[in-house]
Length: 141
Image (cartoon, rainbow, N blue to C red; front, side, top):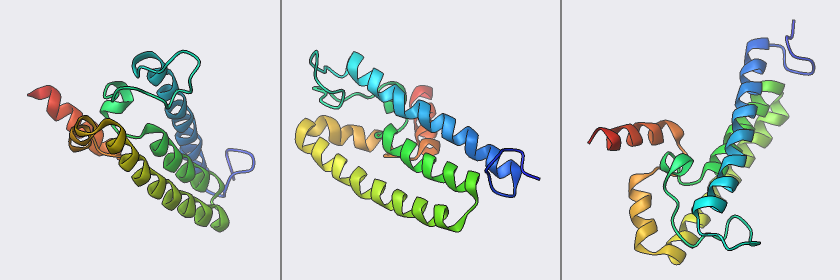
């Protein structure tokens, strides 16, 4: 029996999907706040128009938290629904996020130069497990 209305047959997978979706929603919001406060965004400008490389908070764990939230959300929907079409669409979404993620790195290298290149060496793109690991290693030094 399903624990969550409208979810797939395996209740515990659906529950993990809900938890991941909530985490992804949080990860989508925090970068907007963080960029506005420490990214050098001009008053009235959109949050993405930073004037400096932000490498603290979520950005110390992954370079692109919002892309990370995107793939986490795709996995969350797949776990929640447990339907083949959602799983396939999730994989397509993840592939699209990966392409856009790579384009974002190219744009950021053009915009910030060596500072972003060095940031790329320190912080993984969208793997939070590797990001936490690297961050903990940096803090131990």
